[in-house]
Image 1 (cartoon, rainbow, N blue to C red):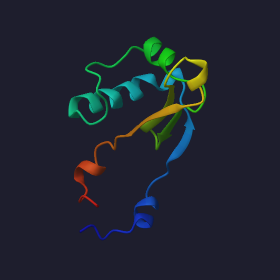
Image 2: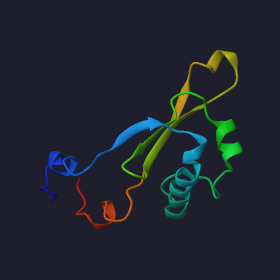
Image 3: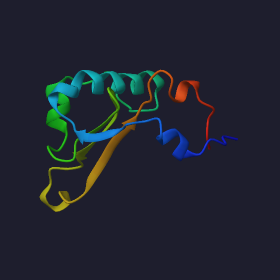
Image 4: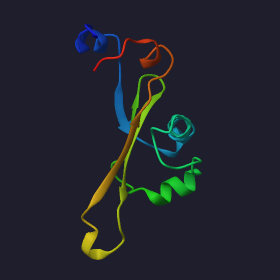
Length: 109
């Protein structure tokens, strides 16, 4: 059982939530590819190009979490272009911790 309080972990992090921009794409794409490799992040078999990814996501509510580098991202995608269902949205997000993060930590459930 993990006994380290979340607040102790947060004292050592300086995570900022910011808007995702095209300049973030290389890091976001790397995280996307990690999700493909594990089979846990997406059903896709290859990462899209920036143009494909950009066209498939709503232009608002694109976020990255960063602590010097991009740790994770979140974006909204439309479910349907039908006028009746336009209010429904799906969320697509991932958080991939880099070296020294979850890979070396004791799992917490």
